[in-house]
Image 1: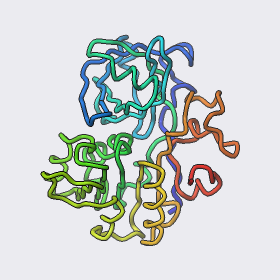
Image 2: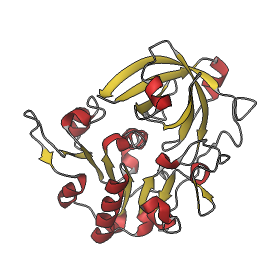
Image 3: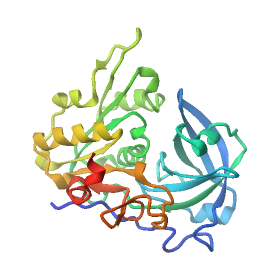
Image 4: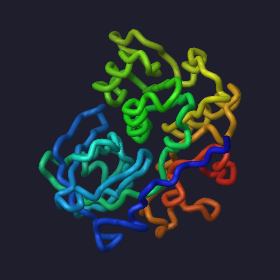
Length: 294
């Protein structure tokens, strides 16, 4: 099987966008804010216009441009289930001007939304395969929609593994999801932290140290990865050593993006615009984009 990153059924910003202008954001209301870690929050949003809300759909792995009015905008990946139609969630790390100001917003405040943009995790192409997800820190956010989709369609996939690591127990995202996922008999969840606290009873070490516990056949499996660049690098090296082919290691590199529509040039690598042709790529595809593998 030769796997390439999936094209979404819709790529708004190219066709079927529910606004008349690519650059005019839709207005979204913040219905709920969830504190995930000391520097990370999840925002539950709904589009204010009922018609736009009805037409709005997206695929796991896609992203939107979020406008904090008076400050600017930033690309943020979806973090909720694509099957949920009444709202969508974005998990935001406080690491810049726009995201910092977004962290100051309250429930009931409004932001602008452009999108969705980009391609998606190849969930249709990997049906029947075993799935291994490796994530570090806030990298679990763009993978969470894929996880929720697979769990909702569990019979369509083979063995399902999640390896997730963070710096400390406090830095683990979705602490309300993780215990529920660990209880499932059809989902193997392994967690680790770099530095334990007095209450942590689990694994200690980088996320790749968990790979020895994974029992699956690389010839019938696909790996999805997302996290800090150094984690992706060593996870990929380990997966290739395990026997995964380069076209069966898939990652999201949304950290490179800015405008989201291929106009600013910020994410252009070797004439490839990562925001329009990505952010999801196989490792085989990234071989021609060496800057993304640093």
